[in-house]
Length: 303
Ligand SMILES: Nc1ncnc2c1ncn2[C@@H]1O[C@H](COP(=O)(O)OP(=O)(O)OP(=O)(O)O)[C@@H](O)[C@H]1O
Image (cartoon, rainbow, N blue to C red; front, side, top):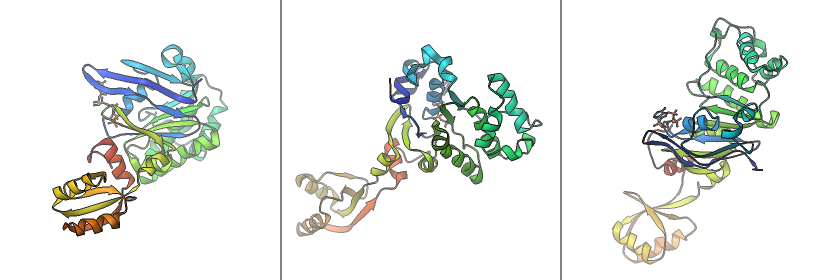
């Protein structure tokens, strides 16, 4: 059996000729928070819908708890809670009454009501009409609904979308508590890197339907390694010099970048001795934001 709670292989979805999800291999380990990150339109919701068997894949496989979603969907879904769009409530009913509607539909024990209200910290306001709730409280109530029946896996599609900063903190703190306190594995999608960074143990980065990075949050941070940023003239000759000296580099319009471990002082001296003008030589540590943008190959669309 797989060690992953969710594992996809070459998961692909086409809408007509448009490839929305392209051979995605996701691996969500047990007991963590997997942040599924990507800009708008990257393919997150489409992937999540396939994970839940809500839409059919064009190609590939989804296994949840080691079982095929095609063959054992109902068995799987008994152990999965999800929030894939902003939940709609009866505003004039209380939180308790709204939750009770879902509980009855699911055929879950009554004792679940108190349990889930405690987890999402809505016990004190359970008898208040939902129309008086903040968006953050409504979202927590949505998570309470998803937790009915004690699922082992919770799948949340952009649960902090549209929330104000305090709502975001409420929902984030709640999600962070779930694996450790209740043994729940969480997959959460977002287009906000800082959100994911603050709660995820693992990250999958998707853009234009392709999974471009997958690993632990530390793996992602490790990519923040320092580089030397060099500005020297004439740039094309300096490039040739670095190539001839066997020094790997990258470049943008103004700077050349090379690994900080490659004796920058020595390279600086040699450039000067060879008659090049060195205007700048400095250590540059890429921010996680820059790493992320370089992974998705874009400078747009992210906050
Ligand atoms: N039913 C559909 N028919 C046609 N195209 C679709 C359909 N659903 C999604 N798409 C397209 O597939 C691409 C991926 O959409 P998806 O909703 O999965 O992205 P996302 O990463 O969840 O983005 P967002 O954060 O904006 O929801 C988009 O270009 C979208 O327009």
